[in-house]
Image 1: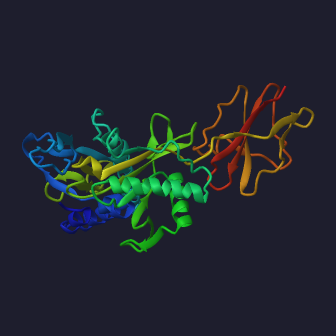
Image 2: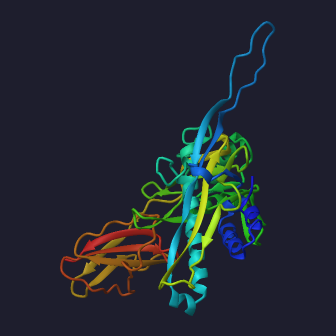
Image 3: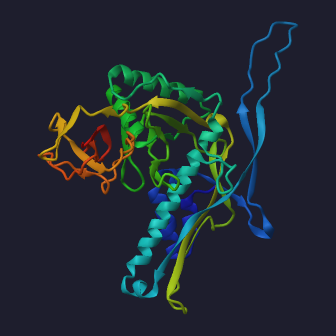
Length: 406
């Protein structure tokens, strides 16, 4: 087993070392995840990794004289996972490359960030039925003995009683795992609620990581938000650990990394991560560079993962108070006329009804405009106006309403 840091140390090329270092710095998960670097890409290999997964452990019992034990065996399954090629390319005009040498470094770093996000997405949501994906934690833990129902847990408003409920659920999940987990993984809303619960009960701990950044934990188990990814179908960024906008519910994962639990798989040698810089010394106006990461995921024991699913972490989007308009002044009237402290009103206008917003998605600042204090906007006959109260920092909607100008 090796880590990405081990691979970095083995590289003689300084640029290679810097690129791998960026992977480590941008992902606490990749910094800690061990990799089995045993797959050889030579001779037309399919990059397939096979292993035995322990599904259930055997039972032990006492017996009376002249009685036999009740037979029970460990349940194992033969599993294969294929390594996948993650990464992307970029193009730079040679004039720009010479005029702005930092552009290559910038584009390379952005590709590293995108590749890390892609690995994070597959780590949770991957499905090997898709040709470019491997099975992630959601697929493996589903229906297992450590897949817990959290639908009765409501953290949308944090109280001492709610804090006790969620910490008891965390403790139950941890005790049912094969080893103590290194990470509690959720989206940022879930992490905020979990930190609040831990802080309320005195279980929140804080240390510094290898780079001097503060790391907060639940009794030494690090909270980890894997961030967001660009959903090409929806055309927007979405949380890697998703949240259902209608119900406000999400999942919480606990994961134990190690050779007998959850670990990565990559090709042998030191070529798990590679980069190619644009070569401006050859003919051609536009040069291409890329970043590539060859990796897979192995789960040797299903009890190395636990999930608390369907935990409510946000309230549903409410209706805005009273919403009306005055014809003679083109004024939109909102009651209350001023939003709560820390919030703002935004509006959008269309000739047809405007689709209602989702609670967990920030408004599009190009489609919505901050509502003037006097409420006067440019409206035409039969226009629809949707007004949304949002958090002034995150632009996440809190309440909304629509009115037609007739």
